[in-house]
Image (cartoon, rainbow, N blue to C red; front, side, top):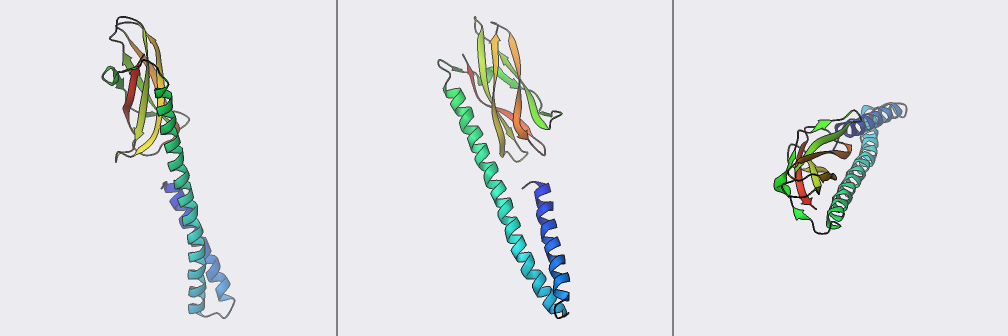
Length: 171
């Protein structure tokens, strides 16, 4: 869960507790009544906040599954592609001015004719969990030369991000 969502949910819960405590004091003024009403309000709002956070996590998971499926479809469309993972290198991930993570992809063409490369780049967190995946094309690399492209995450990624090559095809 993102830190700002946790702070938001905590803020909502604390606000509900404070509001319930103030409202409860105007009823019979007893501390136990105020605490009971505050706890009840916190449970109600806490449940709503938990549901909202859970919904956001589910949406993020669905988006990642969709991006992974799309990357697979793009690579599967390439006819006559040959495994080229050994000919691909990734640079160090960096954060662009728009907040997205980028990484330079270098493809070395070891063939005797011009080739293009399609490379799936997986962005992962420090624990190895997949955060995003994209496909970058390095087009028309001359025989015996290297070409470069830039992989760019589909959204902002937080924390320390690692990039690794998934599938890579030369065609």
